[in-house]
Image 1 (tube, rainbow, N blue to C red):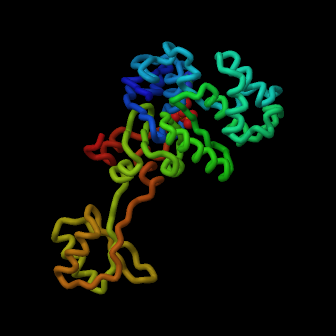
Image 2 (cartoon, rainbow, N blue to C red):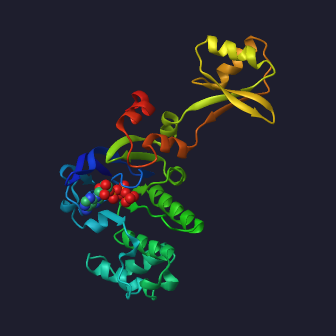
Image 3 (tube, rainbow, N blue to C red):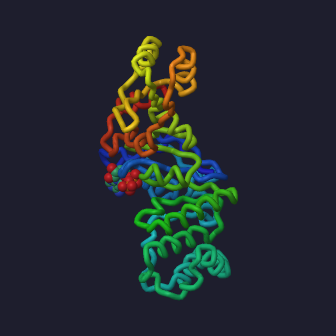
Length: 314
Ligand SMILES: Nc1ncnc2c1ncn2[C@@H]1O[C@H](COP(=O)(O)OP(=O)(O)OP(=O)(O)O)[C@@H](O)[C@H]1O
């Protein structure tokens, strides 16, 4: 388990991470989402003891990283896949890591097999493609068979095949009961990978919930409706205090968008008033729309906008 309590990091006048508190539970992938510069890498570096917090604590299995005995056996991380020595073979690189951390040599071939690099284990890591480097990074993270794993933007720059492979791999690790925290700036990617989502913007916590709850809370839901008695339906809906928008005239004729209600309620109202419906469709903004709205699409969002979008949820 990972636990953050009031974690804060200032670089001079820059508040990279500000009073961040959340826990990451084992058993499912937790997505750590935020636009570029939101503070994800800095948070991960503090969890791994690579940056010292200005205040607050980051605990792995109940302890700060520096106090872990055999840290590589407790937490593994993939931060930057390109840090390997270019002239070392994949196997030599892992053997060096294992030796310096008291991990038996036999584990090296095991992790190479796990990530599908057995056949190129003797090749120089400098010549590896990005996808292969990522796999090697994963192998390194898994060397100590840790219960806690951190991955910083692991699919950045990968081709679709590589993305799917990494995604499935992370899900498998979580299904084994491990704690898996994965950062990304792409909500669409996280929605397919993670079950739980921690969203940050400008170093602050915006949301900590399941992926479904996040969409539910942050995206606008509307009901699209078409009817040959559209004017009558519109006046009935507005007389009940609902906001109704014209949804344009498509090939199928004019349609309305009704805010803040459900398709059940609109259908019931139509039925009670003997109004024929041609279409009755609940609509929800896409994940990416929700995320853009919530974070303002970049780092320079304004606190007030969040209050507005999230309503009482903040
Ligand atoms: N060593 C440092 N010195 C000064 N400022 C830093 C340092 N590291 C990070 N920052 C600043 O802290 C903020 C958060 O950066 P961080 O890299 O943690 O964000 P991120 O969410 O990981 O973004 P990205 O996805 O672009 O890496 C940014 O404003 C960044 O410029």
